[in-house]
Amino acid sequence: MVDMLQKSKCRVLVVDDNAPVRMLLRELLRNEGVASISEAENGVEALAHLEARPFDIVFADLEMPTMGGMELMRTVREEKIIYNSQIPFVFVTAHANPDLVAMARSLGVAGYLVKPISSGQLRAKLDQALRIAQKLMDQDARPSKAADTWDLK
Picture 1 (cartoon, one colour):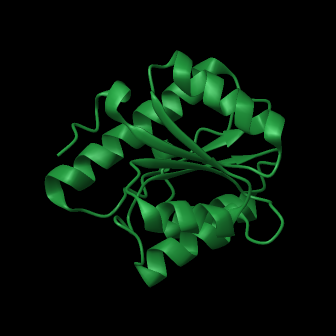
Picture 2: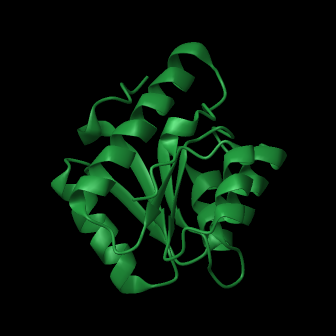
Picture 3: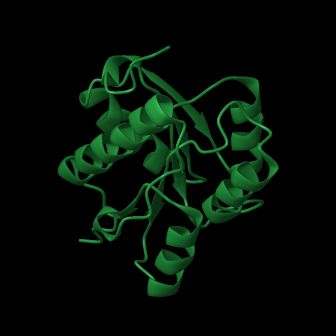
């Protein structure tokens, strides 16, 4: 099994309908040492990726046409049709809406990035998601719903 704490071996799926945002996330992730990065334009396309091969982390925009990040995560969690239905999700959004945060927490999201995204924010959320992925791999546990995963600054 892959050691989830090694960024160079981590498999990340970036899901966003905005190509420049996908490009920014890809570059920030590469700068952090992540080598395996796939992209999808919406949740439906992301499901196809997730069904085709295993990923360690998903960075998903909350609001996208066809299927947004929240619906994608709910589908993955409920239908268990992918390699790892408890895969850590980090939501990316332009709005830190408290209702969306509460809903995402109830689903066990690993983190939340508010645009504009900085390299420091991405590093912190990537490290956080990697710790959750490692815990899942080690203990076959569900993602933590701890309040400290919700730094919305």
